[in-house]
Amino acid sequence: MDFSLQNHQSFIGRPAKDLPTPSLVLSKPILEKNTQQLLEDVKNLGIAFRPHVKTLKSLEVTRMMLGNGQHRKIVASTLCEIRGAIPLVNEGILDECLYGLPIYPSALPALTELSQSLKILLMVDNEAHIDILESYATTSGITMPWPVFIKVDVGSHRAGLETSSGALRALVKRAEGSTAVEVEGFYCHAGHSYAARSVEEARAVLKAELDGVVAASGLLDVEGERKVVVSIGSTPTAHVVSALRACLPGHLVLEVHAGNYPANDLQQVCTGLVHESQQAVRIAAEVCSVYPGRNEALVNAGTVALSKETSALPGFGDVAGSPHWSVVRMSQEHGILGTAGDERVEEKFRVGQRVYLYCQHACITAAQYHVYYVVDEEDVVRETWVPWKGW
Image (cartoon, rainbow, N blue to C red; front, side):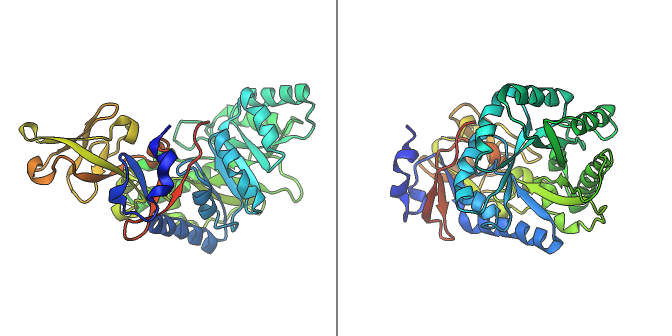
């Protein structure tokens, strides 16, 4: 069993420098500030908000993202995340969860069981999904339709259908004619917004998101008082959500979703919308050896501890407080620190030295750790949070 999972509470009250390595260190002051900013933005705009729980998968962070019940809906990428969030239903601050992957057969029994505790919405982007849900309704005896979001592709090309696609029109028509589903709205995720490098570029992606789901919603035959949700967002576009002043048709309800923003990471720093100081996650590691001949050092944080995600910044992780030094190569448990600058490694690092690394993609990095060590402004561990693991 992981050492931290067995002993994490023994580190409460101790400085981060005493933690075993590698460990995930989470700054609660930065986390709270990042989370509160987006809550204030959506409040000022008077729009709905649905946080994605995929990054720091824990009750504590999810409760914070919901504003302790100010918002009552989430997006989840795994069944484990939905199960993990059930205590928030029991607390009375969570009512609804969208399962964020296009639906597949083996997930339906578990989602049916979970729907006894909270409202479950499904994602569809293919007529085959309607076939699956109709077949499941027949075999399971379920008579109530599943509420669904239809996924729209606004440029990420990960999941969803483009608004110009005849397949989208056919899917909407098929969904409206099926007794197994009820269309709740249209959803898009602008993953390509991570390539934005300015506020203006992020705003342009945000506008494309909104235009895409609004256009898709026009394919619905809306009658009477029926409301249709258009759900947009990603962390880069969420950072500029205050620019949203859209005049939507009266039957549309605007919702924003985002997930990475409480943590932030080097990919977000690259957008120009996040400062390095807004990164809540650091990985504690130790220098295992120093190699003056090649001007590199070895740390005990490799691919498993960091992931092989990259960005416009070089390497797989930056050394906090040491500009220009990064993890330039990795193997499973080994990370190699290097620099393109003139500093000499023997003057910068020593064997046994503790270093803290900013990660490229907090969502993937955080998934490797069994415990989050939560520190205060003085870098003292005040809490330990155990995340949801697996699928």
